[in-house]
Image (cartoon, rainbow, N blue to C red; front, side, top):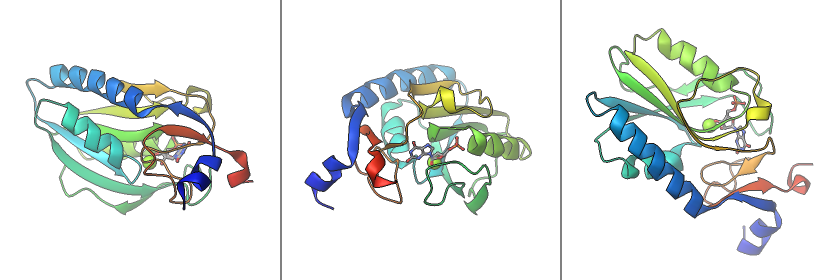
Length: 183
Ligand code: XMP
Ligand code: MG
């Protein structure tokens, strides 16, 4: 897809690359402090969290182990089904670990709610959540996320790892997808 065509698919830029990096640095400073005396295991949720994980781990000064999980709850739709399937499980046992789940976005909260309940059964010593974005008005379940980048409106957004049907993940800003793309 050419740059001009991509630009046409964006309604407006919501959060810029610079804003994202600035906020991630603030969150990293908090996580540096909070995990100064314990080893943290970062658990990323593929594929959306790839960009957040890459930038966040490099903003941290503490060393952090990293593992990945792939779940699906969406398909090519723009609405959460709440039905979560594990597509790729973690390589690391969670027993006794201080887990920090790194997510791209909390929308309805259903995916994370399921994941957190599931992780709790694996004996982690602690579990916290970092989400780059959160849509407070879309919440169907409350997620107690300790580290949140930005609260945003409920529009479907793309960029910075977030996709629509696998497109737009590489955009450096986060933007609202123009309705003509999916309607
Ligand atoms: P829920 O509703 O379960 O959704 O909190 C979590 C997952 O759904 C995806 N998601 C989005 N992806 N633009 C996207 O590209 C969005 O606006 C959006 N909202 C939710 C995302 O994968 C997230 O982890
Ligand atoms: Mg995701």
